[in-house]
Length: 576
Image 1 (tube, rainbow, N blue to C red):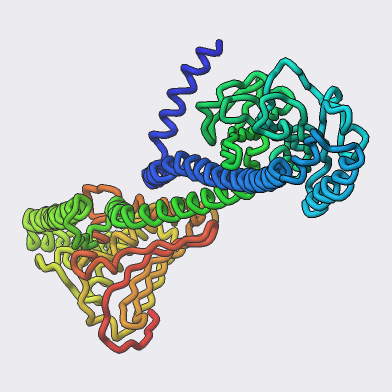
Image 2 (cartoon, rainbow, N blue to C red):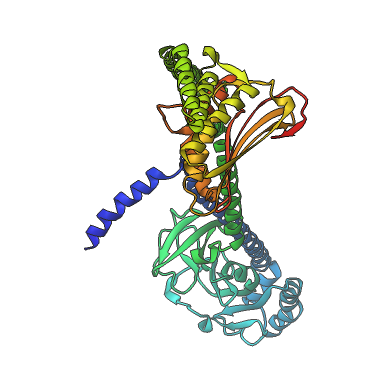
């Protein structure tokens, strides 16, 4: 079921994409092409900024550790100075040498020489916490508060031989132990000193850091709890990543020149993570700005590229509506410019062909009309109608005589001796003759009124333009009237710079929508005769496209068909 939905969804999606406007597809293509590169660029920028801050953080931590290491190196240097001043002090050596010296003399030496020397050194170095001298000489014990039994020395082993200078760090203290004097072969006296190094050690251990201090031989002087698993001291490097007990550390390595030690400071990687939201905000802000610029540039590019196409599209619509008079050209030499110029050339050729066909049809109609005129022998027709007229008068049939005269006048004015134009007066005589014939055929069931300005009678018009209008008014107006008497009104007058010819009937009329449809059918429908279309076509050819037939109507009232043509005579209204 799900697969069937997907199969149906995909064709619908393709059809929707295919039917989407080309401008939208082009805009989407520009936007996607430009914005898709922003994603890796944004990710790269974010991680680049993150790595830069991480490097700065590593450098900052390295400098802090280096400062703490420098401080520790300075404190060790001071401790070595203190140790040297005690180990190589001649008075101290004499005090510890009890051979050939009385007990009282030992006491004086300790009282006047040893204790003041030690106290002087301790008071001048604030980081000294404790000074002790362990000895195995029973005669020296108790002479000074600095003298202790050698057996009480922590981690002392008689079988260990010589006790060279060694250090140990614990609880923020640096402990130095060395046999006294240092050149002796046996351990009889031991100098024991404790120094305060909590400040420098605290800096190295701050922030959950771990520390290992090792001497040049790889012996551990100090190590933080849990660091027993690391033993690769010789190959350790700064910024090295180390995993201990499942946690990742960044290792910082420094040397302590005074002792030849090496400090290895382990910083938890989680403590160096950069979670600064400003980086993400700045990256997102730049991406949003870049997306906005992509939208703007895509829109401008679409306007620039599709502008000529939109112009060509509007020209095509005008041609579809029947306007072949437009001029379509382009100065561009690209494909769109070539297409526009080709379309413009096609319109010119099409316009020429349409006019030729249009004129050929009118010429054909005129030829047919002239052929009809030629087929009718006017003299024979007039003589026959004249005979019918006199015969009707002799027989007392005056109505028949009148109809024969009207027919004779109608054909005489309609044929117009083969001429294309006539006067308003002659055209009106043709219309009156046609109306008289229709009155006879309709048993005088309607009235006809004609209003014409006298100055309009000499005006030249193309012949046979009123009769089709009157015929249309009778057929579609008065003949379909169900109640009341029909009224046909003809109006000819000057209207501004134009001549107005109007035929009005009081038939049923029609609504506006029906009126538009009636106009289109009457003016545009093909006809074999000489109806409204023929009249409209001949007017446009003779006077131009701005002139032609207009139809106005109101439902239930009347219908008016009118023609406007150029006029250049003064007007004076005459009613008859």
